[in-house]
Image 1 (cartoon, rainbow, N blue to C red):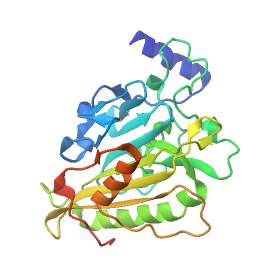
Image 2 (tube, rainbow, N blue to C red; image 1 turned 90 degrees about the vertical axis):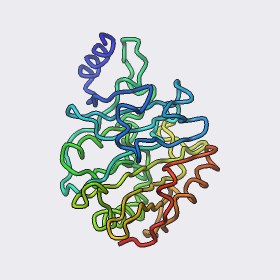
Image 3 (cartoon, helix red, strand yellow; image 1 turned 180 degrees about the vertical axis):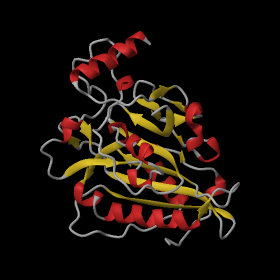
Length: 286
C-alpha cells in the first residue's frame, strides 16, 4: 500500500491524472458487469476469471468515485484493453469535460515512476495525430449518469481508433444499438428498468503501432445480451468491423453471438463471450 501511495504521489507531481481502479487477480469483485456474473473465456488469455499470463494480461475493476463502474481486460504488451464489460441501464445526454486518466497499478512498482507509460498509453501518444484518436470501448454515450460517463475517460478503456471510423460507421452502430437497448432490453426482475450486458473489445494488430509503441487494433467488436421484454426471451446481437479509414460511413451488419465467437476464435483460440442463454439472435435494430 505504501508503494502504491508513493506511485500516486509521483503521478500527481508529474501532472498525470489517474483513476483509482483495482488491478485484481480475479473479476470476482466486479463480476456484476458480466451476464450471470461469468466473464468471457478466451483460450490462453482469460480462463475461469483468471489471467493466463499475469505479466501480460491484467484484470481491472474500474473504480471511480468510490464505486465500480465497469470491468476491463488489459494487455500490457500491446498497451491497449482487449475488452471492457459494462451494464447498459439508460442514457446520459451530456459529455464530461475531464482530462484523460491513467492507471498507476499497471506500472512497475519500483517507486520511481519517472517515465509513466511503460505498460499503457499516454495522452501524449496521440499528440499531432491526424488519423487516430482515443476510441472508447465503454462509450460515454452508453453511461447512465455523469459520474459513470467520467469514469470512461481512462486510457485503459481506449484504443487508437481511426478518426473517420470512430466518427463514422462505428458511431452510427453505437447509436442504433442504443436505440434498440432503450426500446427492448429490460431487467427481468423489474420490467420497468432498462438492462443489457455489453462487451466491447479490440483485436490487436500484428505490427501497426501508434507513436512506435501502442498497438493499433486491426478490428473492433461489440456484443450485447439482454432480456427482451417484448418477446420474453434473452437475445443477443454482435457487430465488428476493421479499424480503418473510411470516406463514407458504411453500415456495420448485425451478426450472431456465435459468428463473433468464431471470428475471435480465429484470432485467439477458443472463445466464449456469453452463456448459451444468449444465443437467440435479435435481427431487428430498432
